[in-house]
Image 1 (tube, rainbow over the protein chains, first blue to last red):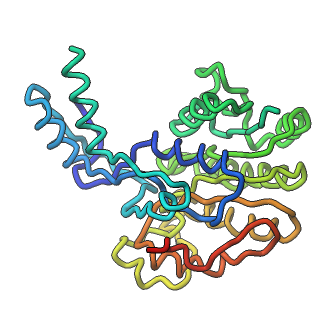
Image 2 (cartoon, each protein chain N blue to C red):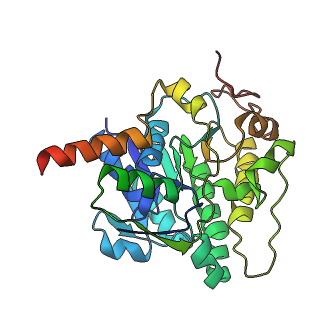
Image 3 (cartoon, rainbow over the protein chains, first blue to last red):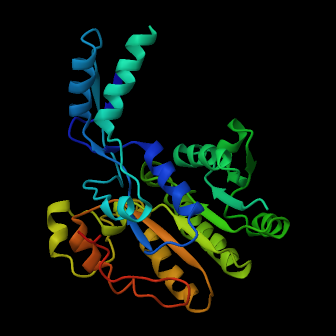
Amino acid sequence: MFIPYRPDETLVRVDEIADMLAALTSAQCCSYRIYNSFGDCVKPAELKEQIESLNPNVRVILGNAAVTGCARVIDRSLFAWEFGVSPVGFWQRLRTEARNLRTTV
Amino acid sequence: MTHSVLITGGAGFIGKRVHAVLERQGWSIVSLDSEAARLDRRCLLCDITDARQLESIFRAHRFERIIHAASILPTAAKLDPHKATEVNIGGRLNILERAARFKVNRVIYASSGSVYGTQPASKLSSFRRISLPRPKTFTEPPSGMSKFWVRHMCESLELSLLPCAWSWSSEQGDFGHISLAESDFRQPRFGGITGSVHPIPPG
């Protein structure tokens, strides 16, 4: 598996951003006008480690690409509080997906 | 009654995912994208720098919301800063002007940490007010600057707009300090929006 980014870059899962934008779209009103993104910051190095620990048969190779304009720190508590959502968390989601994959294969 | 939303950058990473979510929720969606629309049948082929085409789309629909995700991203912007400026500033102005004129209730703009410039996160704590990012060269993408510009443009448009709210998905920083940096901007200016200076949840 190849992840093109440098080990210390920061990535954000796009589905959580999409869910957030949808929630802001559907809300009758929004109490604030600026929200931090609703998602986890993930380092490619951590991602590699987690994936390889979940499946020792997988070898993750990281690239050298830089990420631009991406989050370095996220505090999603405002959005979570206003919209009453509690994030699953990236790592939890990854573990669950891996478990589901193992049971279906 | 079906609610209607316009998504710009509809064939992009964020656009197509948010399209899928809103479709499941029953929204009537018009997705726009430029070249990428050729690969995604759900999108109308439209470059947001084309004011005439945008005008006809806005006339044909009554949008309640806009998710503005169309953008030339930094890597591509470095290769073609002229195009990036056209889309990230001119195109955004086209969208904002029409949002104002056609009385769209809410524009949701997915910004990024670029708006704060290139300072490392650890230095953000000293930011009391946001300063305009300064490009190192002419070819450095005007990405952060264009986001900053959109912010000011929204603010000035809102002075003449009722009620046009917009949400900004900013992804960076020590939250408390960012709220201070943003505090002036966050002041409520019109009815229907209950803004707050310090967006720190209770408890």
